[in-house]
Length: 311
Length: 311
Image 1 (cartoon, rainbow over the protein chains, first blue to last red):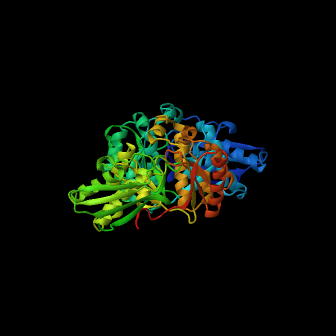
Image 2: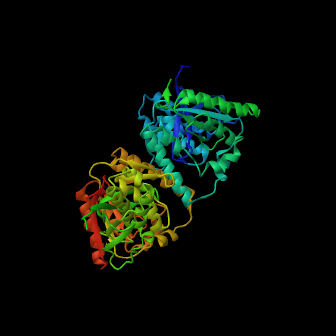
Image 3: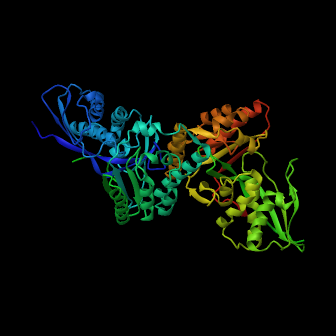
């Protein structure tokens, strides 16, 4: 058995407060790893899954996020008959709101593309990764898949045509992300949302989204601070997350530019203008869950501009 | 009687399709002119109003858009007792959706500021101009006042704090604006709108707004074309405007980047990547109202980057 190759796909923060279903950025860690190698058998096979921590991750290709995405790419390449083995090493929590399924899907397509010596450009992998994400989440949104694959802060104008754009970010911007160990299913987090939004709130939210992007583009930190405010989704989902408003208050008091729910939660992210502030923000978040005796993981990371890579 | 000084404030396109109540740009023409001079009487007085075309524009300061804005600025300057005369020359249609009341309000404050040798910077005049606009329209929105005063394409993040930002635009961008002579009151155009928006539409609309701004910023003309689409407001208001969809189709067929309702209508604007295309678009729009025997005015203009000026 040959050693194969290993790829990494990072966690990501979807929605980013102001950009429900259309904005996301990649973290440097955590993330998933996939090892892929050619084998003498026929077709794609998942030989190992680690790190699933009691969760049921199926070995069947058509039910596995990474496997399905990989298979779809193999179909495109006309290589479904080739003997390929993949090992999936989940190195990040599932159901955390950190784009775990997106990371798996991205790692799946990256592994195949690397195995075949990059027949496609990275951005051409996006539709295949999205098929894996779609299998896992039941909806077609690239706000985790796009940053996990391509890196950076990404605006997804359209999920059907995958009209995806990089938003430049000021140097030093750092994220503090805390994941309390409670489970929220994306489906439940979607179900709780009102199907309509008051027109006035739409105006304010979309003006904030635009101003947030403009602030990032112009390195106008204070504009980022004023505009990173979710008045539509966060108020509806906050109750699903223990001590959400305490965490948020602590983050803002310690200098974060903004703080909101990562994806559909329960993870909470804060953005700060440098790593020192982000560390203080992280400490303040930590203290609240420690005092409340809630288990958690804390991640500190700059915005990852590379996205998924071969290790 | 001294000659006084003369200021000009341009028309503007509010909403710009994708940016309901938060986006607007200034035109080079048409616009309003105000002549202001010191007098020997006490207090501010409107001595002449021309160009009102049968519309009732009140001479009372507290009921007149330009007069009220001017008076509010005089209050701020502690000069309400000073004898001042202003003449208002309406050189653009009222109730057209081209920011007529905003232009009057802006010209009012500009005239006073010039008369007193610029005690305030231009952007500091914004709140006073907005008071005039508020008197006229009954709501506090700076999407016409800000571009008319300051020029350019403007994002208004927040109307209360007047958090207003310039969006750079690609060289050459040109507007074709057609005003059919039917009257729509802003109040009616607001009344027709559903107070809520489906969440999915909010996502698409705000992603389009963000992408439109990004496209302008990056001079990515094709992104501007893909994103200049109003799926929330336009479908609700189109019926108020004669032959709206025919005009729009004609504009797009002739190469416009996008076409939608200016402000609350009935004017329709199209943006094109240069003046030649904008002329063709204008001709195509014109033909439809000519054939339908509807009176109209057509304006062709680049984006006005100066805003209001002293003539």
